Image (cartoon, rainbow, N blue to C red; front, side, top):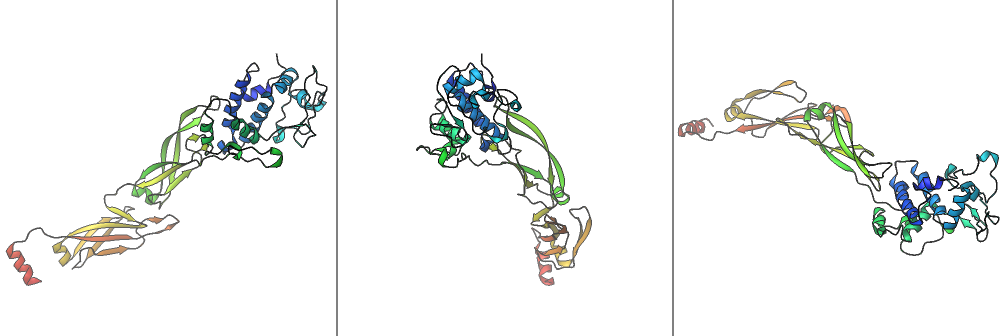
Length: 363
């Protein structure tokens, strides 16, 4: 029977577990709540600190024995009765971002045993200093972690660097340096093509996109797939290749959550080709029309009918430009590119000798 279970609860274990189980529990919880893997979670740093401090006490058999018998408040206050405003023994020391300062525990322990001096500050000779959470994490994995034989895989999750910024060399004392956070690999973005029509790029549109993304279950720590519907806004004038970005909407990985990028891809249009902000369209005429004159009616991208013509002769590849009849400019949507009509002359594939002679006389 133990006085309280707060530290065990923090690590998600029972008070009856062996020391190796405490190591395994810390390994799991520290990786789960490491700040570099939870950049979008403002509470992760505090949870990481709590599990590290719980491990620091429970991983030491003597301090664990005192905690089991008398509780955390008794342990940290050196056996003294807690003041009335403390709310009784067993209070967690994690409020305000750290352990309470100046916990003296020297001598006078019920039941005998070793004496300790707990302090977040300098402490006296032989005193015990609570380590920074990152130092605990670094030392844990540097010393072989939970003995599971896959520490190198853990380091790979942190970009190949040792947690806390250390290599295989000797770890400096936390009293003489600022603790370094473990480096994590850059989280790549998930990219998906978003096919849209030229008309949608002209007018603008909103497309509903169903996505599936992987998330870590808060309780089991395993990844599960969840569905989500996004309303993707396509603004007038967007071009093929434009990226529409959603921060934190991709898969959740060990190093954080991926961003989701939709990449605009333009569907082929039966009549128009886009060239920047301009629209190009080819009209076909016969050789006779090219020589004598022609006239056609075409439909613009916004559905209007306009007449295009040439008095002849019209050269193959001749272009007619209609200003402000093209695509909206994405950064200046009130302005538009041009509509460019290119003339293609269809030459006859066969002429009789008589036709050739007549053309030769005319030309």
